[in-house]
Amino acid sequence: MKTLKNTLFLVLATVVFSACSSDDDNPVPVNEEEVITTLTATLTPVGGGASITLQSQDLDGDGPNVPVITVSSPLAVNTTYNGSLELLNETESPAESINEEIEEEDDEHQFFFQASNAIATFTYVDFDENGNPVGLEFTATTAATAGSGNITITLRHEPSKDATGVSDGDITNAGGETDIQAVFPVTLQ
Image 1: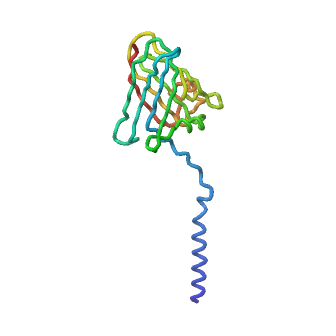
Image 2 (image 1 turned 180 degrees about the horizontal axis):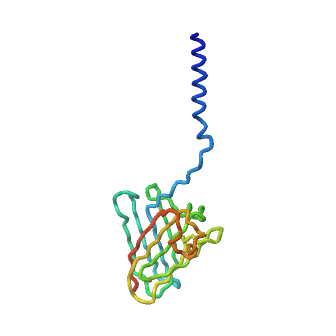
Image 3 (image 1 turned 45 degrees about the horizontal axis):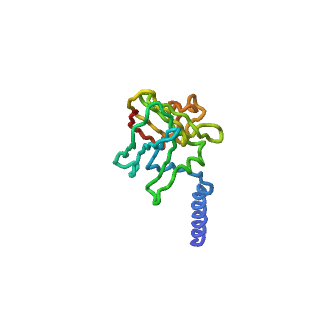
């Protein structure tokens, strides 16, 4: 009788433990969001001149400290700038460039540029393999009169690039999740 109990116990234990396993045989790959601590926009006047940098740096990520926003100098009125973005994860040492990941997954990313008070307009220069805008490279053309306002740069992960207006940079219908958003107070002189 004791042998029968032990045998039944072993059979039951084998069934229970083997029934609980195979969830992890084919796990769904997880594409973790990028950690972006620093966004730097470099604006270089077409035709020459000193570059202007707009930078948002948030070294504690979602921590209690607000991002440090810097704008190196005012923008010139009625000027077209070639723009480029650099994104870093400075929680790593040395700092990790996020640009490479965005370039590799360009069909899953898009930057959006907004300017208050009509101080600037933006045009995309780089595109993904489907011809949709990305925004690591762009042009910015400032208004013809002096003034001030905000330039907002937003990176969306998995936006709906087919939505109305998205290919023209309209964030309204973009969907997706915001990886980073930075608001820069700028002056036109």
